[in-house]
Length: 461
Image (cartoon, rainbow, N blue to C red; front, top):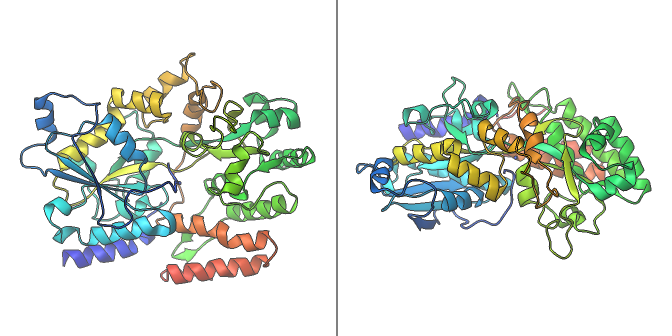
C-alpha cells in the first residue's frame, strides 16, 4: 500500500509543486540505475579522530551510503573535501540529466525504496532547481531538521525556499548559490563600445533595448552578440511572472515569447547562431579567434563550461569580465536531499552540514574550485578581499564582489516540477521558426504536441 501511495504522489508531484551547476551535460560514470562507482574512506576535510568518525557513523547505521546524481561535479568535491567514516563504502549512481533520464531512473528507484535491501536504498540524492519541487513535495524526502540539519542565517533564502515543501518543511540543502551574470569578451567590447570596464559595459547593456542596439554595432564590426540564441534564454525564463503550468494548463509567459521574438530577430540579422548552448557552434566562439561578445552564466559556467577559453594555445583566458547585464537572474544550483528510508541519517546530515557550514570545506570550494558557496559570510569575506580575484578566466576580477549583490535579489518563483524538459524542449522546437523552415504557429504546435505526448495530465490549448 505504501508503495502504491508513493507512486501516486510522484505521478502528481509536479502538479502539486511550485519549482539549471547546474545545468550540465558532462560525462557520467554509470548509465543505468543499478551501476555504481564506489569509494571507501575518501576525503580530507573533516576530523580524522576515531571519536569523530564514530559519532558521524553510529554502530546502528548502515555501512553503505548510496548517493544519486546526474554528473560528477559534487562527487568530485565530496571525494576531495569530505572524510568518509572508516568502514563505510560510498556508491555513486550517476545517470545523465538530458531528456529526463536521471529523473526517470531516480523515480523508479524511489518507487522501489520501501522494498529495497538496506545496502541498496537511496540515502541521499541530488536535484536541480528545474525539478526539485517534484521531490520536496512528496513523502520521498525527509524533513532535514529531523536528522540534525538546521536552517542557518548564512544560507541564501532562495536556496532554502527551493528545498522546502508547501508546508514549509525543509527537505535538503544546496552547497552553492548561483547568481548569474553577463560574461563578456573585453577585447570585443573595446572594439565595439570603446570601453571594456564592467561599469561602462553595464551602462551600455543595462536593458534589452540597449542590448539590441549594441548587437547591431557588433554585427557591423564583424562580431556576434552571442554564440547561441539560447544564451539569453535563462535570463528571460528567470524573469517570468507566471509558471510553465498554471492551474494544470500549459502556459507560455510573455517573457518567454519576448525571448522567442528576440531570437528570431537576432538570427535573421546575423547577431547570433542557432547552435545549442553546449554545442561546438557556440563554444568555439570562446577560442581566441572567436567572434561572440557575450555569454551568460554563474561561476560554475565559466569555471566548468568555458574550457575552450582556457585552452593554453587557442584560448582567450583573461580576455573576459562580468557585469550584471540586462536583467538580474540565477541559473541552476544543486541540492542535496535526504531520502526517506535511508539507514544513514546521521551521515547524510553530517554531509549536508559540512557543505553549508564547515568553514574549511567551504574555503576550499571557493579557493580551489571557484564555487560561490551557499554561505553569505564566506562569500562576503572574499568579496571584500582586495587580493582575491578570478585569475583563470577573468584576469583577476573579483567576481564575488558582484555576485554578493546579485545573490541578494534572487527569487525562486513560478517554478514547477515540469521545468527541466519544458525549458529544454521549447528552444529546440522553436528552432524551426527561427531558421524559417516553419511558421511560429507551426513550431509552437509541434512543441504543444510534445507536451501532450510527454505530460498527458497537462491541458494544452
